[in-house]
Length: 204
Image (cartoon, rainbow, N blue to C red; front, side, top):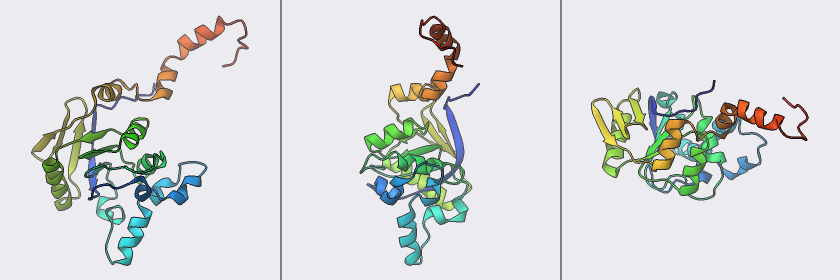
């Protein structure tokens, strides 16, 4: 049986600093014409990465030290701009895949799109994300643990509180954020109901 529950997520982290990073920066608009989301991870933050290379700098998503990161650290109003679901889809498909995002605040539609993919967007205080980003910069192998159950983020011997809407938190804990999981879990009940319908044609 599939398990869609998200109570505790641990992994290496990657920091993308700056406020108001919009979805066009996360995944450029030219990739909205893609037929599937499969290759979007290759192009996440593409224009920002190109610009930094031209300046002789290295974007975090080009830095091999963070290639195994699964927790994204951000600042204020991350994911603002257009409502494209391609943005969280690209993050989910980058390398090992971003599995949780920790930041100061998130654009509402981006937050909702992340929930539908099982990616918790957890809000922490400005001082806490600053501490966490500094620790991540000093040690790319730092393991960050996001506990939806305990509403905490921990790293080394430090921790801070996270906030996430109560109903969304419960969806992650129960696994009910995933509509496919919900459908498959109710397969027997669905089949029983279908069998009672006069127009049911025995599909399986």
